[in-house]
Each structure stands twice: as structure tokens, then as C-alpha cells.
Image (tube, rainbow, N blue to C red):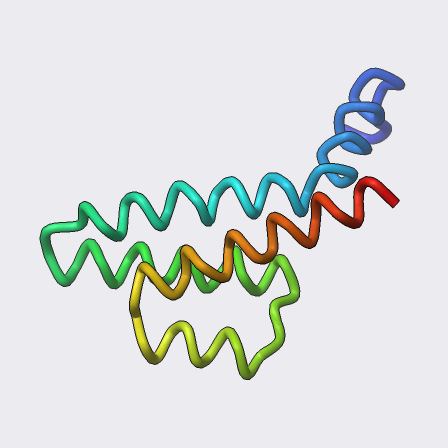
Length: 93
């Protein structure tokens, strides 16, 4: 598979245009799953996914590490809300 079609290129471009929103949505879903996780193994998996999503969002390393050390879904939820507000504000500018 060499070149992408025009349609495929548009799909790829839209994905990257909305990448931040997609990652924030994933983090919102992960917060819910973390609250409902019933085993340490499941929690570890979810925190790993949260770390990947926050890395993709380019969260400051100190904040990322703080959230991962605390492993508090409420802390993650508060930060996700702040990031959503910042993204919404940025999209209006």
C-alpha cells in the first residue's frame, strides 16, 4: 500500500486535527473505568492507558508523574476537566 487516496488523506487529517479532543475523551472514559475497576490488575492496566493518553497530550512530566504516583481517579478527573476547559477556550480563539 503506497499512496493514500484523497478520501483517506482527509480522514487522517481530521484525526490529527481532533487528536487532543480524542485523547481527552479517552481520559474521561478511563476516569469512569478507574472508579469502577474492581481488581488491582485492572487498575494497573487502566493507569497505564491513562499514562499513554497523557503523554500523547504532552502533559508536563511533573504533573503526569504526580497523577501517576497518587493514582487517584478524582485527581485525574479534575485535571481532565481543566484540560477540557483549556482546549475549549483555545478552540474559540
